[in-house]
Image 1 (cartoon, rainbow over the protein chains, first blue to last red):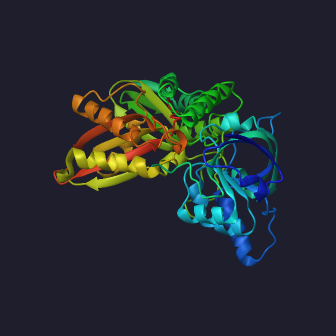
Image 2: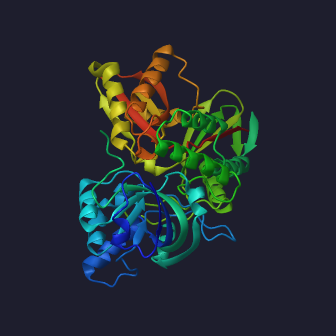
Image 3: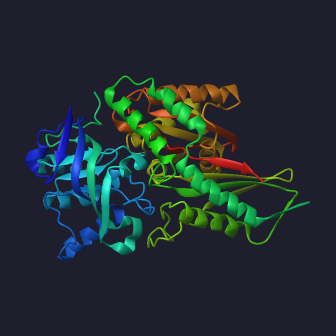
Length: 176
Length: 280
């Protein structure tokens, strides 16, 4: 089934998505990968105010190539999600409603996502040029010193995604 | 004795590092198109359509094929009758990577220490591998290697008694455990024999072989065909969504080994299997 999903990314909009469905996503998402996740978790442990909202937001595991003049961003496909598994339950507990990456996660993430009513989307790995066409704006909003690993606020239009884990525990990677 | 200034090597490395990141080899593209025809499931067909459209967009020269523009793996076959002049060979290669990274808008993808993780800012240093060969030419291969697939690579020191079936089981298990993480459909590079380090290097070199070419030894050719069949029966499929194509190819390189050993290394590459070569 095909869906169009527009912000705000509240749980009521995600509950009807099913693993294997195709989604065209429009709205603001945040790009963050390994280094930014580690830093966010350190800030949460220290009780610091986070540089971005987490509630009702979607995080995209990605670190782009530099933008050429006249483009908002460079190539920006998903990175492998399991490396963020250790950080994800804490963010889900803070109201994160969606994650975009590639490849299966661990059982804990899958369970926490289902319990929270959150959805894990897969973007097409290795299709960074195609995905760049859906990114309309990009702005570094935290950890600029991390370069490609900084947190970016992206405005995306019709970003093509597959529902990997749905809010009912469905799993596109499961067989049999 | 032929003289060759290392600035020629810098120039060639820079050009190939950029070009490989925008234009996938004809052999890999042909293999992707062929495998796309073999998919029945809608999701698998959709993934292949995205992969092929992505290659067309990248070939316009604005956006690299993948944001992981890779660790620059550089292989140099240096003729023993060549005298390299004009500076340090390794620095010349790194300068090529540095220039390519900047000029090609490639990602700064290397950190200077595995724990302290400060980005070097120019994707150097490269992984530089030198072989001395007969003649007076220098062959340079540049293979930008993504780490989503590199992280799924494995090595195991099997013992002689494990034999062919033990090795094949380990190779298939490595791909199975990687599942959808390394951006399947993958290319599987296998090094068998040698020692711990040589097996890993052979596995990486196996990824450089053009798609559609097999090991010249019928024993290994048959092993490659058997492994590809077993791997594609896993139903991991494109991106792990299920389908007939989990691997595009299996390439094996073998070498003499110790009487006590059977090292097996599996280096996985994603479908963006990039490599370019030139001869100076």
